[in-house]
Length: 121
Image (cartoon, helix red, strand yellow):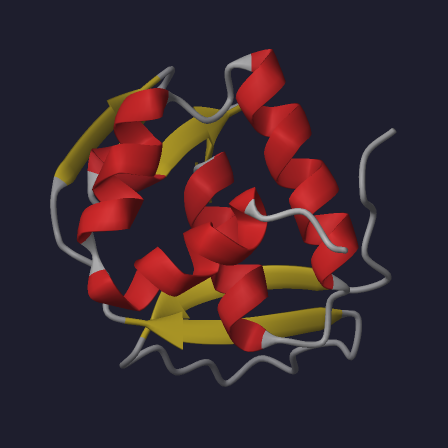
């Protein structure tokens, strides 16, 4: 079972501007994104640092840990569902121990990680 939100969440650089209409089914999150070169299957792009992205069918997407952090920080998604997604992503290898250690070292993400690792009582 995977969590499927009713809206698509996309993180873009803070300075992102678009003259195109953004549909109501898409929620844009603006974040400070580190510039780096990422090489993926048929993809060369400048954008997110490579540890926070991956390429899926040639489309750059945020990694599982970055996506969960963004959703948790944005609020509005049940913590239990986020915890479930976190546990499943760790179990499947989408989130590694190195990635959880990196999140623990980041003060902004540390509290979110603690919530994801703590079961509700």
